[in-house]
Length: 234
Image 1 (tube, one colour):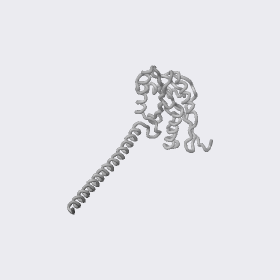
Image 2 (tube, one colour):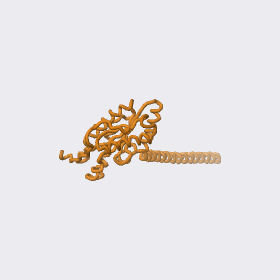
Image 3 (cartoon, one colour):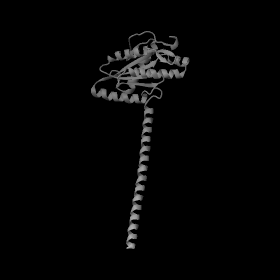
Image 4 (spheres, rainbow, N blue to C red):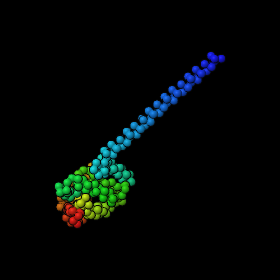
């Protein structure tokens, strides 16, 4: 009888020990899985951050040249499929350098951020404002017809006509604008950007705040200027 009890207790001890080993083993595996899941989540988050940084301007957070090219590529495919149109506006700030020279690069950077925000506020959610370098911005807008470009240009000019308050300074800055249209001015990313850029430079070199459509001046709004004054002295 004692031998049977001993054997019974021995079997129970072995079973309990086995179950404890199984529980510890699976607990360890679960912990390792949780750690691996957490690390994978952090890695995915980091990759998403790196991707966002690669596609957005470091200063303004706007789409950069790479993301703009992708948006234009999508617009080309959609417009070709639907036989519709879209416009590309190339903006270059007139006399931005004096802002940096007079008030420093920190004020200049803050001005660029504010300009980006103001341009975003006048377009639709599905359209794009991009900063492609320095003081150059590009707006991509889908339209019913190329004639809609006049309305959009007026919105841009109105937005840029209001002063930007940066710290203690009220800064007035204008922009030279060039426009290209799909399909009239090209059917590729490079051609549309080049046509808009060319029209913008024709505007800038004219010395007057006019907007050029495919190289033809349209409208005259006076001389381009940059005026800076202390906000406290207004």
